Length: 444
Image (cartoon, rainbow, N blue to C red; front, side):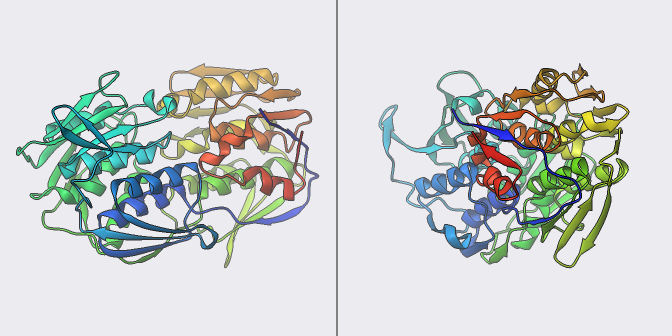
């Protein structure tokens, strides 16, 4: 298994980089394109393990998906909410009923979004995943779909992959309860595919989590394609009946999550980094990480072609206390730079990241401990104390964000080696190549 040895970056440099398109927006756009009536042309598409799984799944379902990877373009022929070739299948099971096989890999968005789409279609599918995805939360979404008339047969464990979608009963209620404490993707999945419900659908949230930045992205994209979801009150959403997405040309924003790693490099090295085409007015929740860096002592500015983050000349940072519930993907990034701050860094509101690609809270504490950094682990947070970072091999738990974040630590500290960097293919397959081009990391 390959490793990468990080090399500290000299302070005071100026760098300009471009990052791939947003994974979150790419996968939402792929689903909407399949649901839309007519042709959808997506530009600025992210090509990664997750998005390729999504595209292949749409092709396996039967959609016409034209992929032009070198142009970052995908063209989808939608059928207005219908499943193409519903009588075609690649497996026959159970009394001669035909099931079409769909594989969602380790992609959380593909797993949740496609499950809702296929279940509400009333057709029969065999849905399979990677071993990693089998352990990630699905039950709240599956129970909500059952209450909407979808029928499932669970082949290993209840409410886990793999399962068969056995069709949908004539029961078509327009009210459903949903708990999103484990993932807001459950709500986005129902909103995006809710236009398939003939009488519309009202979703009542039953949990306590209020982190819904990505839900806002879903609703804005629905509107861009001609459908509307309304938030009636704090915990109630409504999709009106009789709506259809309309195919269109749509450009996908750069991935702010990816940009944040380079902004963090600026913070810990006292450098200046611009990420092209990132905007403050984005709906991507991770843009709040720029505010965190400002609180820690960095300067920022928005230029016509992107946002610039300037670290302090002495590379000094201030420890902070922050609730990251609404941009929790950047927890690892903040943890990676926290040892270099003056004063402790306290992160709250992140209990749900224990159930993502890895137990990210425990992984952060374990790997910082391997570097000699003192931490306190809580059920929904972490406290990180400043200290000297010692050389270490960082395990990544097959988690792309662990790999990318702790490479930032190695841009400041000597002797940091990233194990299994290939896991970054999930969302940012040329991440380490881009760092290599900046003379930050050498392959060993």
